Image (cartoon, rainbow, N blue to C red; front, side):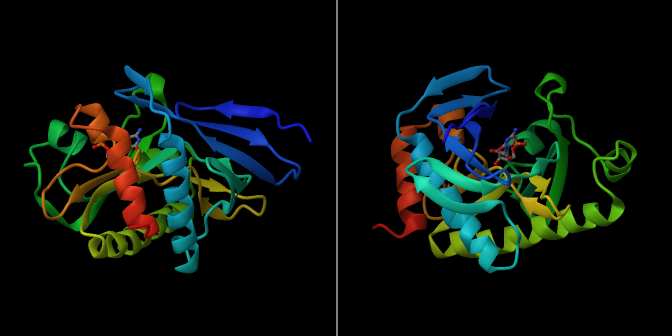
Length: 236
Ligand code: C5P
C-alpha cells in the first residue's frame, strides 16, 4: 500500500489511504505562528494534538456533531473520512482575547455572552480576512442553509467543549474549527481541534494552556500541551 502525500499544511500532512473515501492525517511536530513568521519543531507536540483531537471528535460525534474522525492509527496518525474542505475558519469566542482585542475596543478577559462567531476566509496570502454572511453567500462558499448549519454546529461544539473544560478546571476562551463536505455533500467537522487551535486559560491561575505559550514565549510549550492532554485524556 503506498500512501501518496496529497497536501502538506503548516502542522499536518494529508495522505491517501487504502480506501478512496478515507485519508490519513499525520500531525507533525512543526509549530508556527503569526502567518508562519515564527516556526519551530517541538518533538512530541504532534502526538499530543492528535490524541486530543481524536478524543474531542469522539466526544462531539457522541453528541450528534458529524466529524471526519474514524480512528487513531498510530501516535500521531489519524484515519479520517475524505472531505472537500471549505476554506473558512469558524471561530467561536467566549472571552475577549487575541485578535478580537487587537482589532476592536474589547478589553481582554471580558466575557462574551452570547458567544461570538467570527468567520474568516482561509487564505494566508490574504491574511485570512474576516467575512460576513453576505460575502460568504456572494463567494458561493456556503448556501444560506449550510451557513445556518455551520453556525449551529459551531455553537453546539462550543457547548460540549465548554462543559468538558469547565470540569477540568479550564476556561475555553475561544477556538477555531473548519468544515468540509463528504461524498454525500453532508457538512462535517474536519481539520483538528487541539491546543494549536484553542485558547485555554487555567481557571485557578489564569495561565495560558495553548499555543499562546509558544506565540508569546510564556513557558515550556511541550510541558503545557502534555499537561492539557493529560487532563483531557484523564491520565492523571
Ligand atoms: O488570533 P485569534 O484571536 O483570532 O484566534 C482565535 C482562536 O482561533 C485562537 O484559539 C487561535 O488559536 C485560533 N486560530 C487558529 N488558526 C488560525 C487563526 C486562529 O487555530 N489561523
